Length: 255
Length: 279
Ligand SMILES: Nc1ncnc2c1ncn2[C@@H]1O[C@H](COP(=O)(O)OP(=O)(O)O)[C@@H](O)[C@H]1O
Ligand SMILES: [Mg+2]
Image (cartoon, rainbow over all chains, first blue to last red; front, side, top):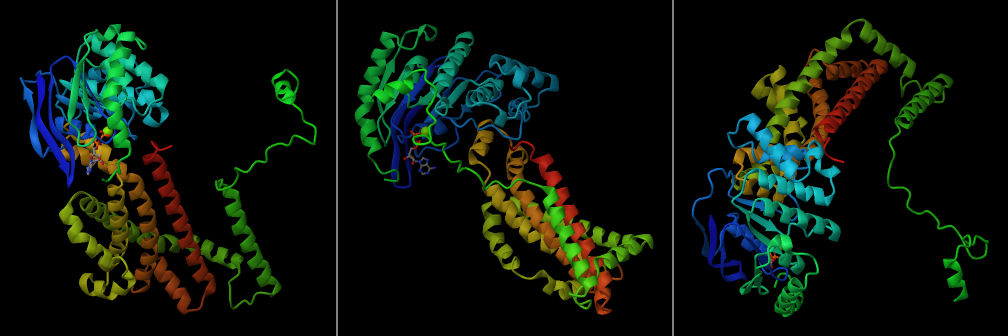
């Protein structure tokens, strides 16, 4: 299943947030979306995931989602969005309970995704007992549990410290290498973008427009922090973004 | 400069009085520690003072009964079986009226929290009912529901209803919207989102609203029982008051206080159980 964004635009009241965005998201690849803060990245992602209606243009799905997928378009949120009153296993269970799955099947899925995110030992812990990195791993486990066709990740690592971010990035690359998934990965961190993106779409400041789409051919598993080729791409992205970011930073938030 | 390089060496830190001083601790206070004995001690001291004052005569016997006499009255009340005769109807009125009011309050509060129409239609109504002293409505309720249990249930239910509604819809408003968005993004049904995200998220606020409601319920219970009841703590207190029997009047007051403390303790247990997920 591929996705395509066609001529999407959006305004909140009088503020134009997104303008004429067109993107293609082929199956099995990761598209990173970078841009200065406030340029509409989260808004774009919510529209792709059907949580919000664009005022112009549309998002189309090409081909059917695999029949096994319980929730084809699945989000991973920046602030984890875990239910604090449910254990790790309970949080994963939440998204399965509305599907008519036999009990044993559900338990098997939970055990499987917790194992894949190395959380098996914490199945009964409550979110408040977990570190930020573990919380985000729970959120990723929850997303994997519904066997998504496309993962929609909105700055999933931004709330974490640098070391945890690096570890989780390796986790994500590991997960993708074992079973490639489709993902749209929104970030303002260019280093994350060049490590995880097969393609990187650079948005301008508000109203967000696609300034450029950069392809990186190097396989994800080969990408190391500090690789000269990646550094070069990152420098180019930064060149594209610098003026936008500076201008965006000087704008009034409600302007 | 020589001093600075010194301090990096392995010499022990200087502690001569002239140059060094321990940093004064200033982070204390604002964190009350629970100490149940202090509370009990306050009670004991007060009661002892009253007892001694009455015996010594520096408190007039017209103003307060002797604590020991109140204790004896309570004991008699228990021995004669009159305690249960009065307590049981009171407790059942409290339970029935309180449950009706709280359940209706939670339901309406959640509806106000979730539906724009309910909010627009009901919030002004609740705001209009809230400040009415419900006791003033008792005669009306007697006409509507009869002098029996019905009017008492109605009074207690109405009294607990309004604070519960207000607490509940405030609590629902404060449920983290990102959690609701998350539920929607995973395709949960509306009912699942309400049951598994909205209600548990609103539970802390609902429970603290219930605490207030419960105290109001006790006040209204007594008021209702003062106006036409054969049995009940309120009736007992009213009768003692009209006979100017201070021992029995205070025995009734002690029972009410004990009821309040017990219920608030039970609420505490409930909160601890239901809100275990909080730090
Ligand atoms: N629900 C909303 N109502 C009004 N304005 C919004 C809303 N959500 C976002 N915005 C505005 O739209 C712009 C883009 O927001 P967002 O998509 O969150 O940006 P980003 O994720 O790129 O930082 C911001 O200026 C923000 O203030
Ligand atoms: Mg954002």
